[in-house]
Length: 217
Image 1 (spheres, one colour):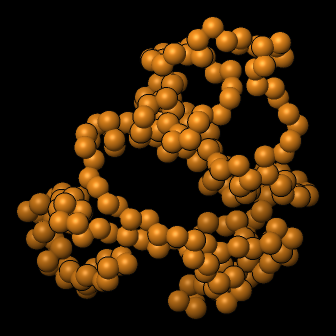
Image 2 (cartoon, one colour; image 1 turned 30 degrees about the horizontal axis):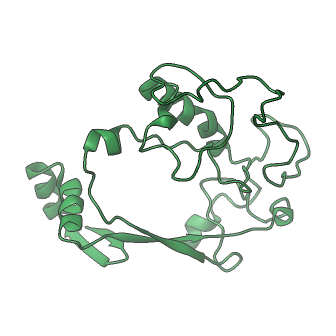
């Protein structure tokens, strides 16, 4: 048996015996290899590609499109290249740059909406809750998690470990007569039409597709 590791830089192989020996001698071998490669300026990179299905096609598609155990056949929806992720520096301070990082599935770029994927739906609240308990309610104020652009105007104030100017003496209610941010009814993204009942039987696996992909593989 051989273990294959594929990146944009190519494929490297280890036999099962080599992998067992390496893991026994240095359990952090993968992390060390990554750190040293970046230090040598041999920057690892990964190409990001997406598949795009029109919302209208999801309802009648032959596979359940929101089943995380299925892959949309590339012949129907080919991969489209979006960009490349390159790791070009090691953390200057591991605690500040890595251990305090908080990735939240519920934070989207304006215009990108949510799907009824059950795995995603659970993560939308679970990730934020976990970070709130681990790092505090103001973890989005930490430099590693804060936006590079100007933060969105809101009335978020106070809370444990709030360390910035906390919006000074600005009003904390809406509406006000001090030119504070005002709520709008503008949609954040296009809604996805749904029909039928909700619950554990909604979006069940569609008949006949349980073994199709495994058989093709």
